[in-house]
Length: 434
Image 1 (cartoon, rainbow, N blue to C red):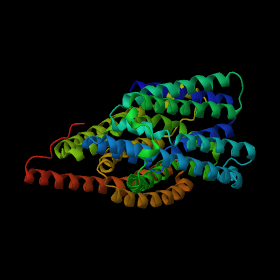
Image 2 (tube, rainbow, N blue to C red):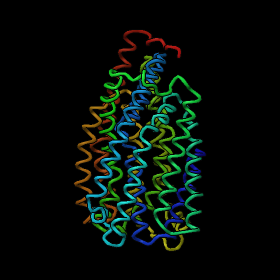
Image 3 (cartoon, rainbow, N blue to C red):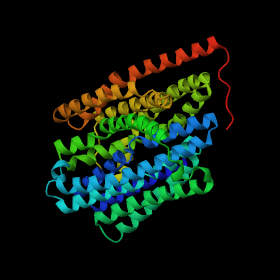
Image 4 (cartoon, rainbow, N blue to C red):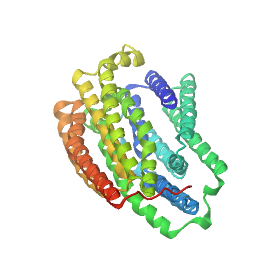
């Protein structure tokens, strides 16, 4: 929670500094780039989450050798992927008219837009092998270590952007500082893991073809789920920018940044459960999994509803305090849409974490694919008729009907089946000591 608090303060500072130093078009471009970074930074081809779940499973069996094979194989797979991402990014940024795609027009020079996009893509590529350390810490239930380095990264970002703003208003320097801070934190996390747990250092001799196959299969499924999530939850800003113009992006993104505190709060509790579900399921502790899932869904839904209601009332004063008297005041309809959006998002996340932890992926990506297609179609249709609120209501409707309700039914049936089998067979599988 302390790390989230520091992240919040730093993000508020950074956006305020950028709004003061950049023009309207460049500020909209900055928000688009940072949104793209959040989107694409999660696209580690699913290998990061696969590492977390498979390390947790091996830990449940007490198999240190398997843990090392998973980490080593994933590290070299992601290092190879980083080279491919760099090459593809160089081609795409130089051949596509990104000013038109992003709705920037001629307000920002074309070469500058290409440079900024390639810088974001290069930072994402360099960070790919480094995500393994973060996932391993989650699998080992040491998320507090990640929190410390999150504080380091956002503190460097905030101080760096503030310092650059006092010297220049060149968006390139702002982006360099912003990206470098995250890379420094990721490198530090990786080095600490290598030093504290030498057995998990990546080694060529530990690369295993069978492990690569398992990682590739589970990673591909998780990658598809992540891609669907990105399309569903992060595409609204691009749709608004493309159809309404880049100058309308701050009107959507700034209130969203306040409401996104709700899922950020929920993620602090839900993300560690992902690995713990897998470890407990491997040990045969089905009763605990069922109990933890029930509590997590109930707590997440209740807490998200309470926080969303508070933000519905307090978002306007917070925006004025944050951005000054020039802040765009969102309408009541938009505040209601954002509140419903984050409540549904948090509750869906609580259910999805269980299914991912248990390795139930096929049902999720089928439902996710259907939702993504419907969501994009409804968002495009609604943005030209309802304005900025249209994509939000489209996401709320499609996620509730297509994903949340069917996933809850499926999860309940899965847990009930294993709970009944455990009672029929007597005692659960005894736990294995690590």
